[in-house]
Amino acid sequence: MEKLIIIKYGELSTKKDNIGYFLNTLKNNIEKTLSNFNYEISLDIGRMFINVEENDLEKVLKELQNVFGIHEIIIGFKDSNFDISAIKENTLNILKNKEFKTFKINTKRSNKKYPLKSMEINNIIGSYILKNLKDIKVDVLNPEVLMEVEIRQHEVLYYLEKIPGLGGYPVGTLGKGLLMLSGGIDSPVAGFLAIKRGIKLEAIYFESPPHTSIEAKNKVLALAKILAKYNATIKVHIVNFTNIQEAILKNIPNDYLITIMRRMMYRISERIAHKNKCLILVNGESIGQVASQTLTSINCINEVVKMPVIRPVACFDKLEIINYAKKINSYETSILPYEDCCTIFVPKHPVINPKVEKAIEYEKLIDYEALITEATKNALIINISANENNSKFEDIL
Ligand code: ATP
Ligand code: MG
Image 1: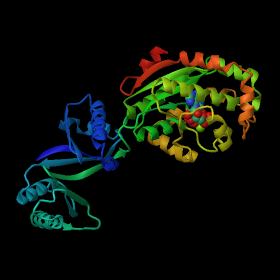
Image 2 (image 1 turned 30 degrees about the horizontal axis):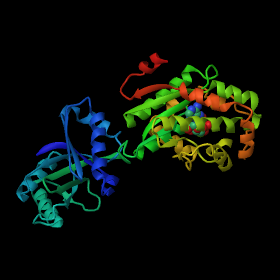
Image 3 (image 1 turned 90 degrees about the vertical axis):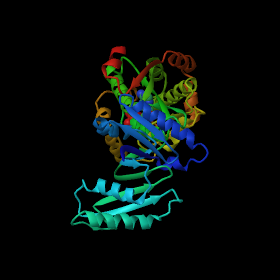
Image 4 (image 1 turned 45 degrees about the vertical axis):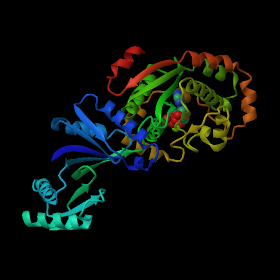
């Protein structure tokens, strides 16, 4: 019997024709994640197997818990002996090292040619265990120990311990998206949820120096780094928004400042997305959260772009978003008190129901086309990887 990690795919198994593409991408992503370890990986249509050195097991399990496309991570054993006496013996060898009072054997037989049915195998193994271990009994409803046995085409698998994986699709299988990443709580969570659906993300951040600080930018890069843990690396586009923001402040009536500012952000984001072959924009807007996120506001802002805008947290309450942020460890960074360009010039009474015609009329007061082209052209690119230490990006800035 050989000890190894077994990966179950979950939702991926429903991909019929292009399952090979999904599984190969998952394998590549796992290989990238485990690049610092010695391991062997193999796969078939139902399971992936990873052999690692015993000393690395805990660390590798931790890494695998950050990989999308994995439904369950199992620490198990594999053997190619299908003989029922070998199966009985292997099960006993695994169970005799455990302390328990009640147990259950659960056999799955994907190899339908195997001469014994699952229930028969359960009974044979169960009786053998009862005969050989003292003071234990079977409990089918609520066993302390659930021993699973899988009779497959080329091997028999045995396992007790299962760790839930992140689920979702392997990153990259659904193409690329551009995440509008602010320093707030919502957008990193939106990014995480988009990555979960297999989208490879790049990020865009608008800064307005000197009105926004280096610390605010570092905070955004720190958030990108947290997302990079799931995405392997993140290319962050930093857009200098100062000239546009100052033009808006000087020329646009107060109540439309935010509406116009956000229309400009959307326009630039779409251009950078096109340039980088991103198929969608992703942001952290949540319906009703602030004046710029009412349904009329979303309409008025969204109409400047053709590209689909995905808003993964649109229907979440703030508390739900916060819970997610805590789970993915972005919360503590997000609540650091540095001002973002959206918050520095917030008017007292932003319009709640902006009109598209009015927005267009006001925009004629600034030469925004030239400003947008310049900001897009001069965007700074930083590649963030989860493994590099923080000082790297601080050096670049
Ligand atoms: P968050 O929504 O992330 O908590 P926030 O509340 O400061 O940050 P909002 O004003 O709610 O941001 O903006 C809604 C969304 O617009 C953000 O979630 C983000 O996707 C995008 N956004 C806002 N400001 C910026 C920025 N400076 N750079 C990039 N995207 C931004
Ligand atoms: Mg928000």
